[in-house]
Image (cartoon, rainbow, N blue to C red; front, side, top):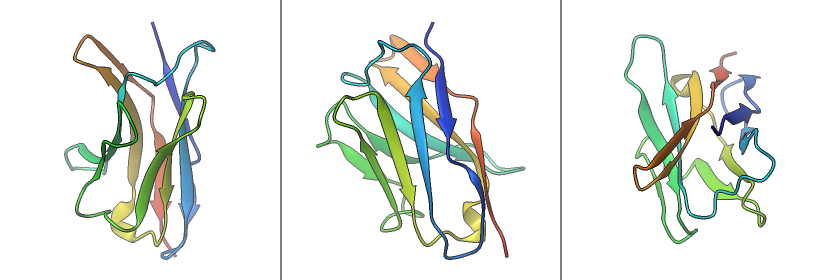
Length: 119
């Protein structure tokens, strides 16, 4: 079983930046054929997808709420997926989760990382 691990969350003021990372606990795992999505869930709200990439970098999309501020990418080795978040707003406060899916056959999640945007 593959376990994803998110990191990089924290507390930042409005207008600040954070970069989240998602990697697998299994050293040999690669995201090469997976669709990887970043989701977030704020208290009292439903989980929403904010960005996706894969199975190649040609397939990238964002939620309207983060378009132009967030950038999803992966390293050349396909071991880590990043979410660069700029110009953060208080409404971006949420727990952010990483998900890797292979045509519905394999579906892996991380435990989440807290992002808090507050002055």
